[in-house]
Image 1 (cartoon, rainbow, N blue to C red):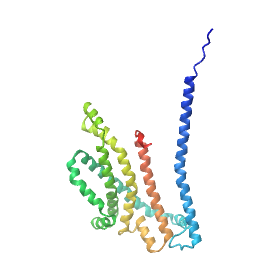
Image 2: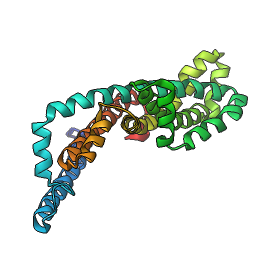
Image 3: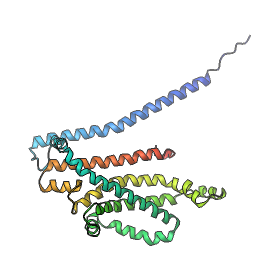
Image 4: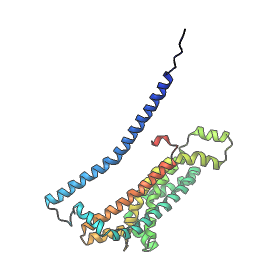
Length: 280
């Protein structure tokens, strides 16, 4: 008499697959925490070395203040730092939006009209080669002494990287995809939305992450030229007054805002590019 035994091979395969998935997720979590904790640990080590060096070598505060002195200023003058951060943030975000929207629009025109690119791209390159410190006085003379020239500087700095990346992304499309859309009788609008625009998004977000940092730099540089408020103006005031703790604290606030802005764009990228396997 034959006895039928259950086939456990398939069950073992499922268990193995499930176990492998758990191992993969655990390794991914460890890698994520590693990427987060290592920079924090390195920063703490550098701050400790900085603090010890200032004390050991007797470095004067107006030359290089200790991190503890900078932290005290961050706490005691937090309100002043935030009041000056607000206009810089408005200028940076406004310039970021204006510069990138203009770059996307022009890149779209370049992608469909080679003549426009051949005519105007060299001009964009020439404008981009002009140093920011040279553009700032010209824009102040043209736009006045308010927020407008700072926004314009931030927009100009953001414009060129996005223009280059977006143009490439709209053009660097698989010809087979275009042929398929043609066979399906897709309209030019559908081809743009479903093929070209989707293909350009990884290029676009790469440029936006760069622009998130450079926009803040542009706003701060603009504030160096005739401004009484903002992170840039506070840096100039602290420098002239030899108030190094305030100078360093102001730089820290500007850097934290720039990093936060970069993080917001990276978060948006992770939500929008869920289909892009290459980014993981």
